[in-house]
Length: 505
Image 1 (cartoon, helix red, strand yellow):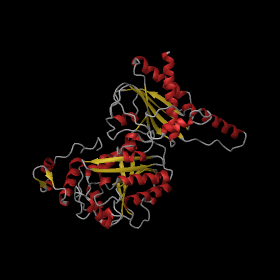
Image 2: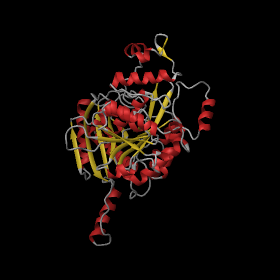
Image 3: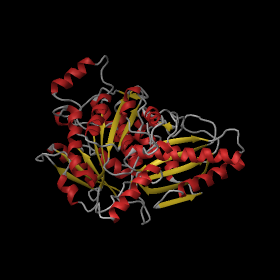
Image 4: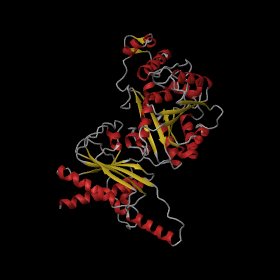
């Protein structure tokens, strides 16, 4: 469960029942409720939303009753994703955030929770069911949120995403969110229920439109992927929740087939047995940290997670910190100043890239960040660029193509706890194959054997596993090509470690 989820330590049903008589009538014994009773779970949802968020909602008996803790997990994960991949802003204060909730349902739970949690959030909320739309309208009105939540009836639309509203909006929409129907048909739903060794943990009151769609959740989200290929950067992050682990694998495969390499995979845990996943993708170049994009711990999903965006350079453990840290800082500044940068700064002010990842960052000595156009450090890349510039001057090409941006953050951490590195699958063998070849190849002069330095953070990423010793932590923040990122890590690793060795001698 998300560390900021108010339900992470559980709920006292007995105390909640004292405060909300509707739930009190459903109390089972003195401290529990019957999760197989639809009325009990409706009253629980209403009590939770009122107590923690001051939201008053009505839930029709024949429509889906949302599990509040897991819905809140999704909202909080989305906020982390937006904050971690934000663009620099010149104006003060939090930016206005606009999202689209696909299939908002009778409760309109996601827009209500989002607006209650974040005062700068606004929503478009879509649905195809007239009864759900009517109920959602009433819930939005009785909470005074009509000016922040716009309901859209998309029953006559052939697309999942409301293209007219998206294309006419004056700026990119920040995100989409969706909890698509799980099942491919009524028979699929009934068959799934029969296969369960034990009954479901709670009663399901969902309607057919909420539970069933042709092809199930995979086909539904894949349709979103196909539509996003047209809309592209009109939406910053396309996301959807998924109910099956196998669905994550299939959606990620769909993204890769269409050349979408900037994606994230989240994992939401509610209680001891309920688990959901989320997949998000972007056509922009802002990269999310591993603590957001690589959450699942199941080994079955490892090969379907995005390339790690954190890289660790261990520093000598036998060195004197009082002399080592200033030396490392100077080597980092010099290394980053040796290649052309559009922007580069080193500061004692803690960057949010590291604060977001670890919460408290008292062991951060200093940090910096930079942005450059493509690979500006490798010799082969520089030679190619000079050749293109010469060709442009002599008229052989009309212009020098602009290379994609590459951005990074770097922090020096003092011998305390830190993430335990996990090998980035497939990187070492590719690097070893390059060694011994002609140095004109792109990566030769920057590669090294760092099979244990790319980091894959565990699900409990706010409290990383212990790893003693001081180190440099690099974060990939902007870019689309992980080969450029690997090259950058290799260059800095080599320059810093060689520089320290020279200083020692």
